[in-house]
Structure formats: structure tokens, C-alpha cells
Length: 131
Image (cartoon, rainbow, N blue to C red):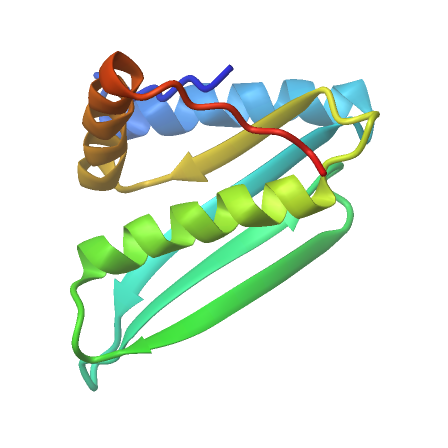
């Protein structure tokens, strides 16, 4: 099941709720959850980049980053990072994976994905299978 949530809270309230959720994850001490943070950005030299940070337990991290050049927008980098996070989670998931959480600070990208998910769900059956 895919659930895209966009907080209506202020940034401060969202950050506080997020910290509480992460604290609960840390207390849990299980490695059956994949947690990924994504971001897209633009450098001072107008280079666009995307990246992600992955963990299962908040004690060990792995990260990936991509230079997307200067021909795209930060919005594109945000979507690219989310897509890469989905691909990465798919690669890392195993029979013990209980949940996959992907966090993005881009409401615009999440809104776009939410609209496309709804439109696609109404027209095309989507099925993900592990090979």
C-alpha cells in the first residue's frame, strides 16, 4: 500500500511530530523498516543535485547523490530523488521488511505524485512484483 501524506501543520509542528515518530522508531530497535530521506537542491553555480540518505536503525547510514547538471529545475531533482528512493528501497527490501518510509520536504513534488497516483489508479491497474 502506498500512502502519500502532506502535513497541514506548520514547519515547526511537522518537525516536532516527525521527531517524535523517529524517537519511537529508535526505541523499537528493529531492522525491519527502511527509512529514506530525499532532497533536491541548486548550488551557487546553478548545478542541480539530488540525494538520499538511507537507514534501517538510525545507527548506520548509507547515502547516494546525483549531479543533474544545470538544465533542470529543483522540482525535477526532488522528483528524481523520490524515484531513486523508491528504486533503492525496492533493492534493499527483503522478506523481513515490514515498512518503507520515504520522507521529502518538497510539498510540490508530493502533491504531484499524489495527483498522478490518483489519476493512474483510476485508469491503469498498477502492480509491483518482486522478481
